[in-house]
Amino acid sequence: MKKNTVTKMLAVVVTIAMLGGLTACGSSSKEPASGSAAATGEATQAEAEEGTAGDAAGTDEAAADSGVVIPHFEDRVALDVVAFVGRGEADGLRSDPVTKYIEDTLNIDLYLTGVTEADWPSQLSAMMADGDLPDIFLLSDPTKQLPMLLESASALNLEPYLEEYAPNTMNDPAGKMMIEAQRMAANSPDGNAYLWGMCKGSWDDGTIPTCGHYIRWDLYKEAGYPKLESYDEDLLDVMEAMQALEPETADGQKTYGCGAWFGAGQGWGEWVFTFGLGPQEGVNLIETTGRVLGVSTVDSKPLENNQLTDPEGIFWRAVRFYNKANQRGLLDPDSFTMTSDIYEENLKAGKYMFNVPGWMSGNANQEFNKTEGNQKTFISMPSLSGDAEDRFGNMYRGERQYVVNANTENPERCVALLDFVSTYEFSRIAWNGLEGQFWNVEDGEAVPTDDYLKVTKDDAFGVETGVNVYHHFCGFGNGTIDPDDGVAIDLYQFSQKALDSKMNDTVKDFISHYGQETQADVYRAETPVTDAGMYISFGDPEGDIASYVNEINAYMGKNVVTAVAAKSDEEFEATRTKMIEELQKNYHVDEVFQYFYDEAVAQADDVAKLVEMNNAIKADREQ
Image 1 (cartoon, rainbow, N blue to C red):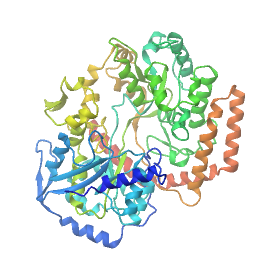
Image 2: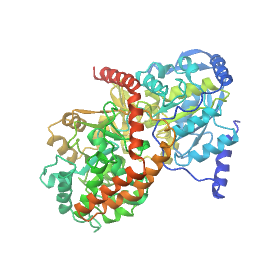
Image 3: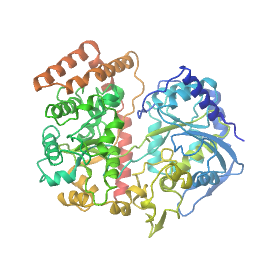
Image 4: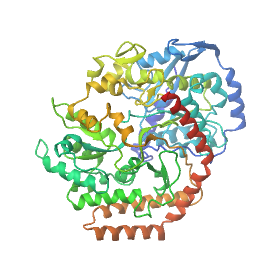
């Protein structure tokens, strides 16, 4: 049997953590990996090149109807994989049908360990110290973790294996774009690809963006569709009108226009400032810069104003919005101590009229829909005042990054596994199970069964069917459109049949109000540019900049809510001015901005290449 390396090491980590020796790191990072470390050693590189001969006896066509190409492997081997996957079964060999499908296709025994991105950094550090890494594993913070792996010659250079063992990825425009991005200077020390991106494309079909201005459209309709053309003023008036129509929840709780989870602390507690306005106005605030830098969602061109020192910039406008809501009694006063789990329970209870996180809006709508005939529905508004927004996003590099152990005994099989699970075909299976159980191909399109749209997805369902087990270890996010049939990967949520089944009178009214045929049509018609991409990759900053960023984050995390709590406009402006002056005087904020602005400008050629590749993909899709 395959040695239980991962299981043993996780047990060691748990024991050490209980003794106080290790603590889990914070939330996941979506920023790209650093290119500051040295490349893998020459000996390892030579071994990798020799390995391309591998154990493949040629290339066969597997699943001929789909066109997926599978290298033929004679010998069965065992692979240890650590991934962000469903945890319904114990770590090791799994019994679900999708796992068995992978194993049979590639002639492997797959020993799978599910981890969270919060806990994995400390676990990975322990494994690196022990020198016993799995064959394929997740990087929760590639910016910091890849350089360490390269320094210890532990990350495989994928280049010698791509042509022969990743044919599907290298023949797919989206796959080639992902690999090209991994070769960029910020993600590679030498122009070779070491990282492999999973969950490319999009997490939604444009109707439930990760960051949006979600309002209770049922109440907005009841209020007579009041003017809603700006975030800074109109939205506050609309929240007040909706709150007046429903002053209490069904169980008698007082309602508010909005809430927040400032009690969650630095970073996550400030999420509504970072993402509450920027994506809806075509701007990404880059968290790894301390949010001093904003870039266009259209082409990643850096904004020339420092977001933390410009009082009219995206960041401070978002802070000002919540201050105005607080002054008008529209902000739940518990927001200053609340955590996000309590906030979401309040949202599902009907306590708030406005929300930003898309997944929370979706969960609230599911809760509302448990009551038959309930028309309560959060709907994401088109951009209120921007010419562009992050609506139909494209995570071209992949939201999750994986590496292959340079010391694996089976590099060919590892790359073949990454390639296979990265296909559109497998991604559809990852989200919906094997064809013939919950979905079928009808007239060339994937269509879910009636029974599938009625099931409740949980761990037990995943064990039985394999559905959603590989949700973060597959090539494409669930909202991505399969170019072969024009249907979203996730048939349960985003197939036309699924959308029709969930269509209530509130959503129909939203579509009718804008004179369109579908909800997605509304957004494309109302905002000139709705497709988005983040084309810049920032590595670890050099010198003192990293320390300055940490100091800026700590200062803002501690002090920004005092601006929200200001009792008057004059007090808010005074607090904001004082904080900006303090940042400039003691926190090197202008120096940090200039550093990252220059970094963004220096990547102009790389960015232009990626934009060109993405535009070609979009043009081909629209033909």
